[in-house]
Image (cartoon, rainbow, N blue to C red; front, side, top):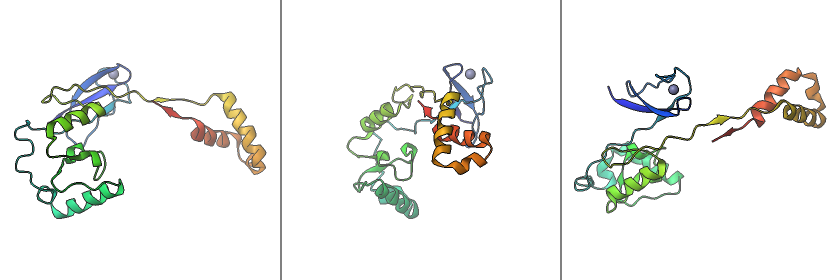
Length: 180
Ligand SMILES: [Zn+2]
């Protein structure tokens, strides 16, 4: 089974875990806290000399249906790949991700640059993963909830007929924010 890395915001370190590809850890194996973040593994990358060899045009690399959805995805992002580019599905964060189209003449150096930019590690290329920034959920302070509640009910007096707790929950949901 493959090995994956997780970032635990509680331990503040990267912890390895072994499990099937489709599964995800729910908690940190060391401190048992929930909220570990999966670190996407870097794609398999070959050495510079063999990197683009034998890949051919995009039409050679992908089966027709996948080629079509990939090009449609790229078009949605306003990108039209050159026909001799190399598409690496392992680098794609979304269907037809423009960044996953690699200029054939840049090969490995392009991939290195991209992995650094994304903070992804690749042992083969000697790049270390950067831990993702922990997300902090900021809870709205009670006095702010009160203030919003007053504004909301002034604008829409019908809200006063609803249970206050319900309205406050809606306000917290809407105005509490996630910062990174
Ligand atoms: Zn932990």
